[in-house]
Structures are given as structure tokens and as C-alpha cells.
Image 1 (cartoon, rainbow, N blue to C red):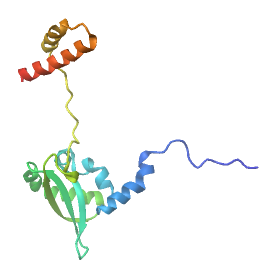
Image 2: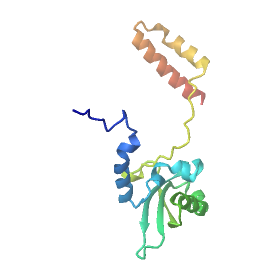
Image 3: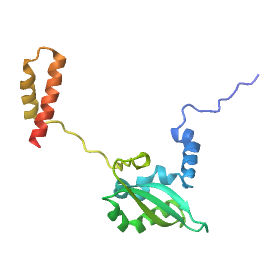
Image 4: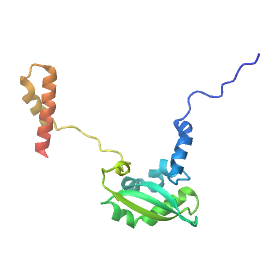
Length: 168
């Protein structure tokens, strides 16, 4: 009797397990290479990725050259318009050939309907330092009279919030 060999070697990477599903979702929107979607900040750079994201790639009737549709907010559209050629060159470099012939910019509000809920946060978020020490001491002095510990903590948070807003 022979021992059965395992076909798996422990855990698998998530990208391997979800690769087919990501590829199918990308292809439904015209992305033949899903790498454009998954590695957008590395392809176009952090500055462009912070203000735009790819939405669709549409191919014309003749089949020559595709149109990349990019979503951005209304305020960032003029800046992105000036960088369209640079954006096209970077995406074509990711494809390895001149796949994209035109870039179309679509504007939306920062919060909107289903597809328009665009957040372009590829930059690291700023670290919150918390309230200033004088605000913390003032808030604890205000909440000092409460006997219940939970109530005192809630009053301190409320006082910190109010005092922080008054300072700014």
C-alpha cells in the first residue's frame, strides 16, 4: 500500500486562491491584465493614484487601441487632464505594448452613488496625536465630580471633544 501525497503544502496565498475570480471581474470591465487594477499605485505612482482610479477599458469597433476610463473628483480633474499622456504611457508600460490609445476622465463627487463612492486614499493616513495635554487635564477636571467610572470616562471624552473644537 502506498502513502498518499498531499497536493497542498500548507497554506496558500490569497492571490492564488482568488486569482481566477479577480481575473474574471477585471475582464468583465475590459481589464485584460488585472495587474492594472490590483497594482494601480505602483503603475501610475502614488500622486496619480491618490486622485484617480481606473474604472473601465473599452475597445472600439475596429479593435485598435482601447480607451481607459479613469474616475476622479471634480476638483482634481484639471490636474489629471494635464497628466493624461503620462498616465497613458505608464499603463501601456504595465501592459507591455501600446494597448491604451486614449484616456477618458470621469468626474464624480467624493461621496455619491454606488460606483461614485470614490475614495482615493493610497497615501498613508496621517497619525492622530490626540488632544493636547492641557485639554486632557481640563477635561479630567471637568469630569471629576462624577462618581460612576463609566460616566466619568464619557464626560472626559465629551469635554475633550468640545475643548478641541473650541481651540481650532
